[in-house]
Length: 307
Image 1 (cartoon, rainbow, N blue to C red):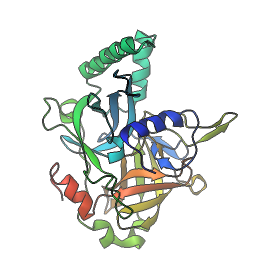
Image 2: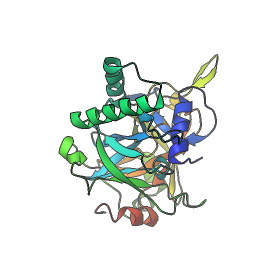
Image 3: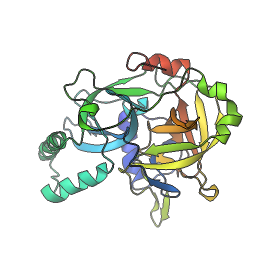
């Protein structure tokens, strides 16, 4: 199930309390996962936005993942940018532990106000502090205009573009952009070779569902993690990946949407697809959007030089 920007944010908040059912993915599972300090091209998509449409910007938080594919282009999912209000602002952070920075600021400067006007002022000051510290960079969202597409192609792809901004992520962080696939590269390799290759998912999302007295919760998130995943199937616009813990795999969950799924080809990690959806508890399946298709490349062409 895909969701708009606002619905996706609401879903992420709900995932931190109780949630069941299939939904956009949002985090790296805690089982068989590890920190990913070396994946400096992977970042958190951060929003300063009006959660309830009352005219006040009342949330500043990470909510999706993405990848730098050149010096000024951050690749993510369209359901991470869809449905925003005119005053909403979009940022990218390549900090490894973004949630830790949020928590530290509130501990030092709290308590967080509850009055809407006072909260907006508090958060605006927080946003400016994060900009001044070089922890976030502001950009402009662009999504596939045909999103949500159809059953054969969801067209769930977007970028945060920094080309018209004074500061780009390359000015702030040291990273090497991810390598995109060539046209039809996954088809050329075929399912047998893809099954034999190593696949990795990277993201900032929450952990898999934890069962408790009040139902399922999805703790954690906001820290860059990675996990080995299992190739299951190649479809025309999707790759289906397995993440069964008992088989030694990790996987994606809430907050990982838009994040990278790499396949190792001839010793090189290629950004084959972006995380889109999976099973609600985040135990079994990661369904990812292929980047080697004509549709994905047509969208990306104005923003990045394609291989």
